[in-house]
Length: 330
Image: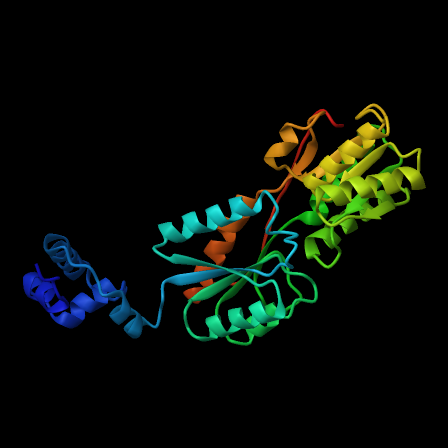
């Protein structure tokens, strides 16, 4: 059987071809009774719109790109929560009738390919993930004028974003430790070219500053190995510390291993708090207290913001709240 055409649908509905086209393209100026009769004819005939032809008219591809701008070692793309972000984005785009293109920008060459792909009109908008402070990609894509949303803050001005309350989450963690009677609270930071790592460090420092306590800081890179090494450094520098706040759970898990090897009991000798509340946090020994990051909700909010931008809607940034999940490590 031949595929029914727009003309056949118009004849069945008893309306003009242009009226059918307006209904198919989702225009809001069509009278409800015309929309009903057209959609009835569409269903009766099994009409499927020609996507390529429609895109020529609407100048839309119904495709959105998620660009992960991360170094080859995968600081963020290797994070256990990253898959939750991709699933949430995919689910929301599918519900909106959109397609997802996932692109990795790990080098200057791959960033150039991303810029060319976006400039070629293959997508209607872009969500940027895992932006480092010196990353040129946000500004380069913003100059193209395409709807653009950042998953967390970016150095590029006027790029809307959806971010966690990183500083507030760190304050939750440190205040919890203070309420538990801890007095020498150290921190293991993430890579400080990431906004979320800097903000979590700022929240830690400000909370201690407000109580007249000094900061004790070791640098990590969001991996278990860096958390273990940073914990060794902290114990050497300050053997009397009685708590540690790690800027993500992977580093906190590494810190737990070092404390166990050093004969320090958790939480009796040293209390430990992580950040993100990944699934593994419930299965450490002892189970890890952590700041829960609503990453799936953040991804959903970022998709909604991007879809609003495509339709010319508001561009106000969105800040997602955190909560502290208290377990045995504190």
